Length: 151
Length: 363
Image (cartoon, rainbow over all chains, first blue to last red; front, side):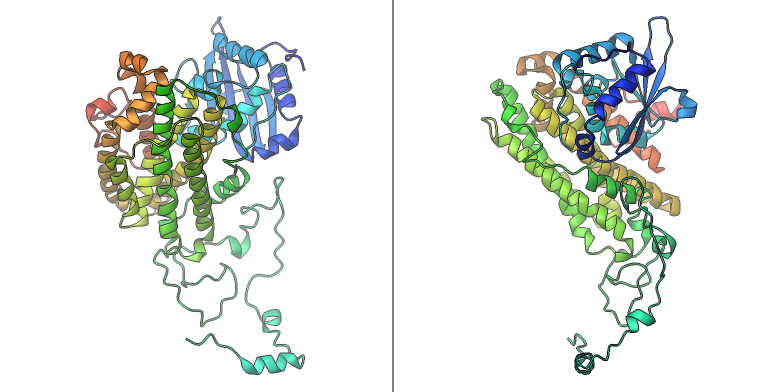
């Protein structure tokens, strides 16, 4: 499997990411159900901040493209500069599933380079509750097929 | 004690004279057809009609399923928690389904074969952290188990969720014990200060008190430790362990937060009681922040070595400290309990946490 063709960040890139992650639906189902709306906000060098939505609904995962935060109503928005996002994605493309330093959790725990913005404590706790599924989605950016970690 | 054996019924039924009262005269809702949602038939799907009505106060103290036609002479099971607000949370049905769906195995789902030798000090730090976690996790099984049999069966969904927590915590105890013994190390030191905190939870006078201390405060701390553990893992093995435990722990914290919210919404006058519980719990929390067996292994894992951790000093643990206190304040606030400015924690622990210092709140 090659890297995702579409440019990052774009709605097409997130769509392809989710398509790859859900290609083995049985493997994703083993991770369990999830109810979560994640916004990925990429801060571009020109100051623009496109927001892309991912929706976890039961066993379904959907990339809903570029969204307006007010309308999309995410549980959590992960915000970070373009270089941090591309560094994370690029590392996964080359090396496979993210190590601690390149995981969503590792990159956000200190508030830099990723900040986790949640409307309330329940939102941020959901980010923790579904971390395995979220990471499995981003790990699907790997150039080589990625075995989905169970549970 | 008579169990009510009806010998005449045995004779009548042997002659084919069935009673059929249960078939003809049952006073429970009939014709219910719960519709599965897309993940299957969930607890929320069957929370319908009279079966979805949970009494504020349980009328009986019986194990009879809620909504069934209960014999008038059922025995009293002696439940002591008979008010819904004592255990309920608005998310408990969904958390139960999530828990069942996201179970994992510490034997099968951790890539134990990928463990690699670590620097001895780092291995020691990991084993010490695993010792503490293996120690503290089981109280989060013991506490719900201690109270489960006292909870009225009318609140069965809450009981079912607590059963999933018991299983989760058994698995956490298992996985950290396995990690300590799997890579050339072993168990480390168990400290009195940690044991005192566990005792505080286990000996709580009420479910309210124990739940606040455990679900909200204690598990909130451990959730942050899991999150830090996943971020600092020296190998994919520990990363997977901490990530899976983090998911479980966050469910327990979500229950505790929303349970407290449910409780306070129905009886705001209880806020003072909960403040008092947490005042006591935070004093122990402060002691944990000054316990070398917890602080130092975390700092060494963060820095990568003893020397680097010493050089970094408090900075090595700052991320964890800020997250623990910050997340705790947010959860309390979401539950309707404003702890800002009244934390029973020394300034050295709350410095830098927005809203934690009394002066900030006053301003």
